[in-house]
Image (cartoon, rainbow, N blue to C red):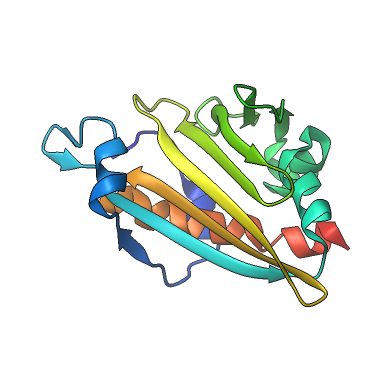
Length: 172
């Protein structure tokens, strides 16, 4: 279990989907076993957005845009983002244990983002893949947060859903 405050994950209870990784994905997971926990679970979240993939890409990679929508303003979020392979990103808040950071591992503008991802106070990275596909007049977005234990996958699923619910209003 990852330490730190996670009250924002509980703000919007939803059903969640925990997906077992295939053997190839499992082999990429760090060690696979830490204190009896396996890290072969993932959370998958999908949404349709009425904006172009390029517009959604900007909202996901521009630090000012991330600051504006990702977490509620009441948390005083501040995002950083250098959307280049090897570039760093993260979002902090007024609370030291309410933050995450990582590195961009793969970028295919405006279609795919792959990131390492670490919650404040955690001792290991997970992996986030965001796929953007044109669909009608908008974009289908799929977030897969992988290399997690089962309990954390469930919490992250709810957390991502809560965050992504703010994105359509930001996109206008």
